[in-house]
Every structure is written in C-alpha cells, then in structure tokens.
Length: 452
Image 1 (cartoon, rainbow, N blue to C red):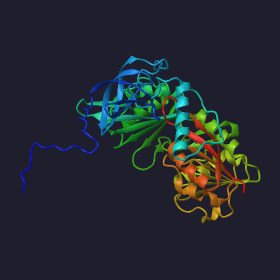
Image 2 (cartoon, rainbow, N blue to C red):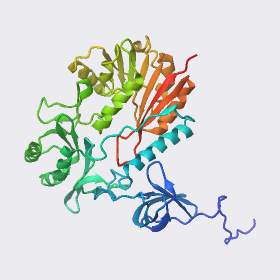
Image 3 (spheres, rainbow, N blue to C red):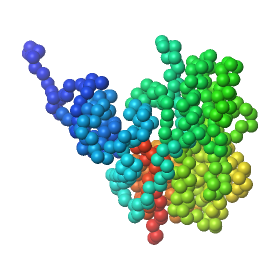
Image 4 (cartoon, rainbow, N blue to C red):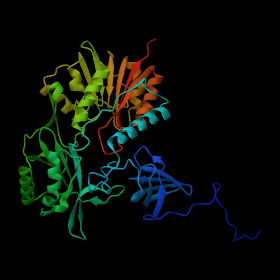
C-alpha cells in the first residue's frame, strides 16, 4: 500500500472554503439594494450580506449576527455615508426592538418596497401580472396597532422580571418606555405595566401579557402557576386605573376575571359588532381592516341573488358584511371554537342568511353537503402557508369570481398560478399596508373566470 502523503490537502469543487465569520465581528460594507424583507444587500468576498437598518447606496459599519455558508446576517452599527432617503427613526427603540424594521425608510418608500415584493413574487413564482394594479390600501402610519404582546421573563440570577418586546434577531427582551405604533389607549398601558408586574409577589408565574383595544381595552395575563390573591388585587387595581378588562389565561382557554365580560370591535359601515376573546385572531389595524373589507366586497361585486362562499372565515370579519349584500353566505373555518363565535356574531347582529360550518380545508370541498348547489363567488383569507389544496378545488364549485386575501405574497403567487390553470384570469391585485414600519406584506387579488 502506498504511503499516505500527510501534507496533501484537497479543496471542495467550489474552490477554497471561506474562513468562518464570528458573531459580533464588525465589517464595513457598501449596500447595493433592498431585499423583500427591507434589509440591505451587499456582497463581499463571495458572501451575500443581509443588513438590517441599511439602505441602498449607503456605506455602513455592520456587526455580524449570524453566518452560515455564504450568507451573513448583520445589523448596522454606524452609518458612514447615508442615503438621502434615510430619516430619523421616530421611536427611540427602533434599532433594537424586533417589532419595526423600516422606521428609517419614508412611508412612500415602504409602500414601493412592498409593491415590488408582490409584483416580483407574482412574476417569478406564478409567472403572472394582473391586468390592473390597485392603489395601496393605507391607514395611519403610527398609532395603528390595536393588539400586541409583551414578553416577560424572570431573571433568577438578577432576581428581576424582564418586561418588553423581543429584540431584533434575538430572544433578548428590550425594555420599552414607549411604542408609537400602538393606538393611544394601549400606549399608556405599555408604559405603566412593567412597574405593575415587577411589583407582584410572584412575578415568576407570569408567562406573557397581551393587550387589546376594540369597543373596550383588555389585558390578558398568561400565568404558568396560580396567582395569589394579593397579585390578583394588584392586577385588578391596574386595570381599574386604565379602564381595562382583566383576562386570565392559565389552564384551558382565556377567561374574563369578571364573568359576563364581553370584548368586541365595530364595523361601522355595516352597523356590525363582532365579539371575540383574547387569543382569537383579529386584524391589528382597524383602519386598514375596514378598507380591506370594503375593497373585497367591491371587487367581489356580490348581487342580491347570489350565493357566496367565505373560506377561513374566522370570526366573520368578511362574512357578516358580505351577508348585507348577497342572498346567502356559506362561511367555513377549520377551528370549531371560531365557528361557534362567528355563528354567535351572526345571531347577535340579526343576520339570518349566514351558514357556518367547521371543515378540514385540506379535504375535498365539492363533496360537502353545503357545497353541492355551487357558488357564484368565493372569498378566501388563508394563513401564511396559503390555501393550495383549497384552490385546487375552486374551479369545481362553479364560482365566476374569486377574491383572495393574503398575508404572504409567495403563497399567493403559487396559488394564483393554480387558479389560472383552472381557467381564471388575474384581473386585479394590490397591497394592503396592514403593518406600517415593517416589511410585512398583505395583498388582495381578484380572479375572474375566462369566458368560453
């Protein structure tokens, strides 16, 4: 056997392997463009860098957050040569809090970024372009969030309760003194609540805290162990001071501290009130939610003689206003508790032309008894992973029009391609700016069946 040459070294076929980059390393970069998520993109030594807080054309000093293979995640430490687009962040926590990633970018540029993201996903994934682009649906740039969650963690070493929002790209908790994206009624709570929680006798029992504003303000305390009477009294006093409902979430579903407490939100154009419980999905932006419903109903163009299907109906956010417009609405949701709440909302608003069903929306729909008469139109508002299995069946339901509301342009583009294969045409699309100051994109698309 030949003697092994201990000095011989082999390289991978792609060339020399780059030396690993340690977390925390600083690097000066020139930013080329923005990624869909709003981070700046730069290239250096064969690596692609994604830099939070950077803008195209800038020269910045960055700090490495994570590195794998040829991709590096980093954040801006210092702007050496700034872009004329850059603006001072309105919030003092913007560079460390994980909630807002685009406060340094003017609103018009934020909207343009989201519009490009939707257009590129439709073109690259679905190979589609709508016949017409709708103007972005927008509301207030700040003071828009009507629900949020505070992270809470007991630091046993420091014997201190950490309260705040999660840091960007980290599990660290950032203490928050203000949050300008919250509606005013919640801003006062987020400023005062940390002191209340730190004053509890058993702060270790608190898991997290959520707060909501609708027709009332509500505070939900998630606790991992029973709360003592003294701590309950402190929480009740805090809620009384801030005119907020107290909800507790231990084992099982959240429950109101005071039996009979009701929490809801209004849809004024239709004279509707929808009741919900903390933990239910509710759109965070009331202004854009109303505009979204109005546009969906306008695009759907439901007539008084028509039967319409609402998939992933939730509490009835679309279904109840739609019932004011058409002969019958069949609303379907996969979670039985939400179906029951939606049904109760229809009863409370005296709507008799709504029929709610719980169904696994990954299974064939055409076989369901409620689907057999067919539908004139379909509206769907699925979760982030989209609705591919449902979309594959829509052509068999006979609908001439489909309105698809999406919180993920990539899955919208994928599902749009399937609808086109079934004989529909993408006639309109546009973004919904549900989350200003973030790169999160929501969108709406209208599909109409091609005439034979």
